[in-house]
Amino acid sequence: MVAGRGETLATESYEKGEGWLFFAFVILVIVGFFNAVLGLTMIAGDNIYVTARDSGTVVIGNVDGWGWVILVLGILEVVAGFGVLARSQLSRWFAIVMATLAALGHLPVIFGPKPVFSFLVVLMSVLVIYGLAQYGGRDRVSV
Image (cartoon, rainbow, N blue to C red; front, side, top):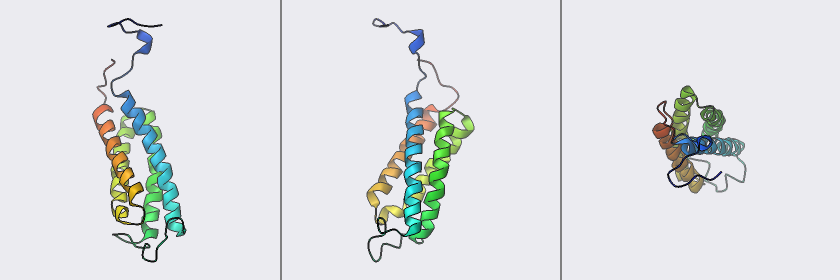
């Protein structure tokens, strides 16, 4: 069915900001998965991640310590992503906290061996926080 100009179909209505919520879900799951993998490689001290003689240090602590932090954050981010998909307010706030912690967890790693990945995680986390804070509330309006 095609609606003319100015007409809306009842079957095609959507909530304002629904795309941002789906974006937050997708990014949380993808970044959470990659954080878990990154955390495992940091813990294992794999040559894929730790390449230089002095790259075993990060701004705060060492690579193993931040590996555990990022691994746990990654697992919790995946859980938060699926909670956002369920549209729960508790999950929304949990996802905002997890995205904030992911951004903060990657700040010291930005100056480590893989700065581009960490910068992208911080950037995506900020976009997730925006989407959830702006459009994840109870007062969503059908458009």
